[in-house]
Image (cartoon, rainbow, N blue to C red; front, side):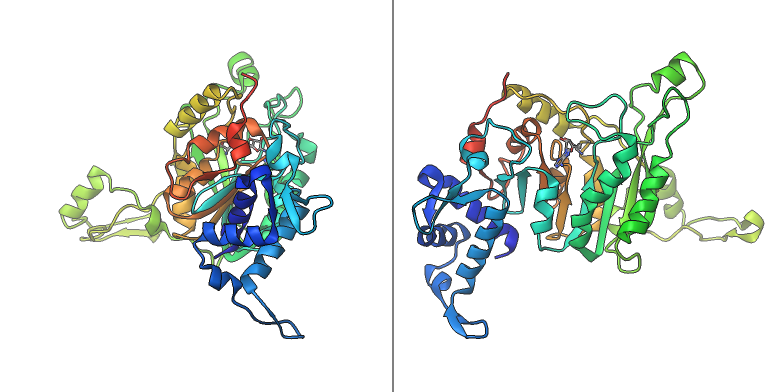
Length: 413
Ligand SMILES: C[S@@+](CC[C@H](N)C(=O)[O-])C[C@H]1O[C@@H](n2cnc3c(N)ncnc32)[C@H](O)[C@@H]1O
């Protein structure tokens, strides 16, 4: 049983207990039951520590995790009752109190866990190798979104701080992918901020990561803008892309494989392959490129994608999230990315079973794509309005469990 499973089994055991209270013995039985472990295996002891005392390693792991959950404010000791623990008020019994310090498992599946809370409080406790952290932090917008934005001066430090616990847990083959905006303008000026350049340098210099690529997310359906400088003053053109930066812990070991993201050949290329490739002989670029008879004729499994990703921002999952949010009385999310973004990077940079995280979860697209692709996942989102409706998008997946307190919570309407 891995730590992620333990995390959700233990929190789930407290959430399902009447009053959320459990003695440790009852907790061991509930965890064994949830994890499908035989109670005999749970009780089996081995010599542990210098004193070689006989102890159960599974029970010991449960108690360690119990301490982590206590440190995270998810569970607390019941006063005057020895060895009895319960969910804290913030973590299950009064969910409507949406405080920034709340940290709780909102829901989980066999593959992943969604945590309502601030990423800074969660990832330092992870203790598992992350193969991919894929996220879109709040942008340094002048006109803030409802969930709040950091200003441009503080932005680089804010993102670096959010990445620190991730980098600590990043697998040597792991990657970090960041979708940000390059449409941040200087005050009263059509000149763009150079924060993107500062951000990339800070991530490489301060966190020791390596820049692998600056992907362009070409979104042809972006609304026209910047209104002031393109539509009114006419000194800029409309924007159509956002950068997506890809960083690796170690470029020579990175777990990237473009064969996992091959695209169908164009009709023209398929016809070329069918003809047996080029029929001509030609030289281009002062000898840098040559075409010989037969070139490009090998049948291949697909085309290697280019680093311009043409994805519209509309997606069925965003629409479903909006519907669920309205049904439950919550605010809708103002800046989701489409499922196609995490779907591409998760396939490109991870394999089945590896761990994908998103520290700024929003509508939980990263979790959703990871779940569909058979990757393990952990997502944090600190706004209840966004994470509660997301749970509805995961109900059909194996092992879905929702914290009963979280399930009941509704928005103001
Ligand atoms: C740009 S949105 C991410 C949208 C997401 N990619 C999606 O597709 O829905 C940034 C999100 O980060 C959340 N957020 C901001 N600070 C956070 C923190 N410290 N911990 C967890 N989430 C945070 C915001 O509430 C917001 O939903």
